[in-house]
Each structure stands twice: as structure tokens, then as C-alpha cells.
Length: 168
Image 1 (cartoon, rainbow, N blue to C red):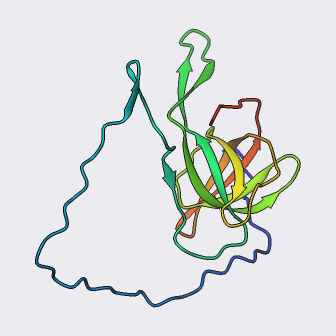
Image 2 (image 1 turned 90 degrees about the vertical axis):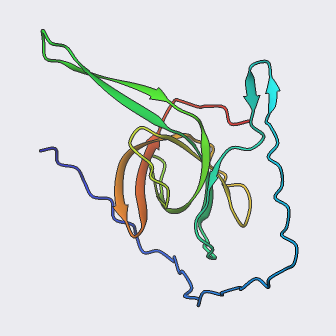
Image 3 (image 1 turned 30 degrees about the vertical axis):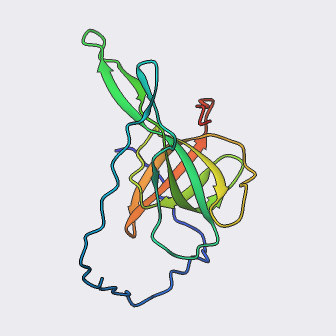
């Protein structure tokens, strides 16, 4: 069995305030509100133009280290050579999206963050900006190499990568 180190976050200032849920009961109205008609996406040739990258958000809380990440999901296919028994992995990438996460630890060689989004091994992530403050000031792409399920989300460890997808 492979000896994999467990990533444990350092002392964190993460505080999620406990709040009573506010229940809002709508008053019955005589006329129902008309539903907006869905508009067709703009087309560029045969390819639809998506104006926004899909985004997954953290539940409402005031988190100091809440960061918007860009992500390029990966699918890994393992091929086995029948003659020699060697295995080879081929990684293919899917449609990009954005999500929010909390930065737990950062160094020159790795980042560790928590996210409610299921991020898997070999995903490419880019911490782009603080959700409440501004630019993140780390201009590196990271490949996720370890994922651990923890407290209603996932703790992910990423290492620098030379794959730099375009999110413009």
C-alpha cells in the first residue's frame, strides 16, 4: 500500500457564525408573476458563446481567506500494456468552471485549500482573487495531487503545473 501523508490544516481563523434561519412566507398575490423567458445563447458560427463561467459558491459566511478559484476538470484513463504489464495514464480535460474555496496553507511548492465542490486528482486550479477583498497576488496554476473529504467539503493539495488554460 502506498504511504501517502495526510494533509492536516494548520491553526485556522475560520469561524462560521451560527444563525437562526430566517423564514420568509410570501403573501398570496392575486396575479402570479410571469416567469422570464429563457433566452437562447449567442452563437459564434456553430459554437454557443457562454457569457459567464459556471460558478459554485460557499454558503454565506464572512471568511477571511475566501478565494475564487478557476478550475479545469480532468478525466484520467489508465491504459495497460498487455505484453509488458506497464501502465500509462492519459489525462483529458473538460469544460472550465469557477468555484469558491478557503485557503488553508500556502508555500512556494504547494497550496492547501478547502472547498464544498468535489475536486478530484489532476484537476487544474488557479486561485484568482479574494471574494471580499481583491486580487490574490499568486499567479500560478496548480495540479491537484491529493484530495481528502472533510467537514462537508474537500481539502485539496495542489502543486505547481506547466498547464496554463485560458480563462478570458
